[in-house]
Image 1 (spheres, one colour):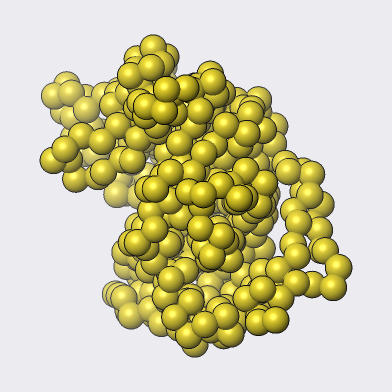
Image 2: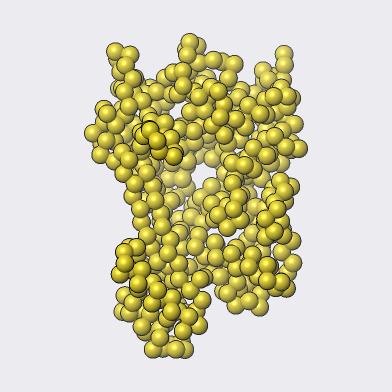
Length: 434
């Protein structure tokens, strides 16, 4: 018996609040879970700064990765098993790709990536293909196996059905994070009938399709996703924390570039500041490391870095007001910038427009940059129909992008009891705080 088919002497289970249990019988999967690169995901929160809004949102990328693996395992072992359209030789590849799909995420994920111009998918591929414990486990299956896993995650693998299990508009990734994030934030929006969706999934040559009888369960899933984005993922308090986090990293980078002497040498950030990040440096960065630096930077002589870190660590976040990027609003923003400078408050760090945007569902539109593989329904006749052609609910939101803009600022620095009262009164009036 080869390593690829080797089973554990006894099934291992992880107790899980969403799926009840995560089942592991394959030796390869068990070995991957034990690698240092996978265990690092315990120190990366799934929802970044959302824990500052919903206090229960402390779950990690590791929790989510195990959940995605479990959903894919159920699909291919229970739903697809013995179906002629499913190639059982792709089983282990599908399980490994599901487990490792988020391997390259950095601390606080998207804010971290934007500031340092990084791509977590690039680092996921580097971990899988590089000199790592994960790579050594995968190579024991076959020397070409790491490349195949990386291709599935990069959506370039030749078998599109395998890709669609973890990357489509109704995939194991989304089905796990919606339910998991709803559970840990304590909201009800992300709940949908996953059991029903799994029962009506069917494999086809290039993607998973849904039996027509399961259309209403899919409608519920799409609306759950819509609500989670606007009630949780784009929550304005969470966005405020992200704005501050982003500004901390920008300020620290700028200080380093100007030759500023930090009281505590930020050696973990050197390669990030220099734009030459090695895989070894990247893997050393997690949220515990970043929070350690934020606490030490509270004591820095630079007042902006010190203040921003104090705000993030102790949750003294920016307030916000609605902002519509019209000519009048943009003129107001220019005026506010000028007044902030007169008040001695740097608008680059303390007056920030933040935008959130989501497209809850779309079908493929030829010529567009981002191809979206639509959700297809399998009718009793055997015909395949795109979801929005059958569902009035989905048709009503298809291709409709919703965007929200807010202006963030530190209300505590604008109180009249402080210096430059007249200028701050003008600012408060423009911000409609009085």
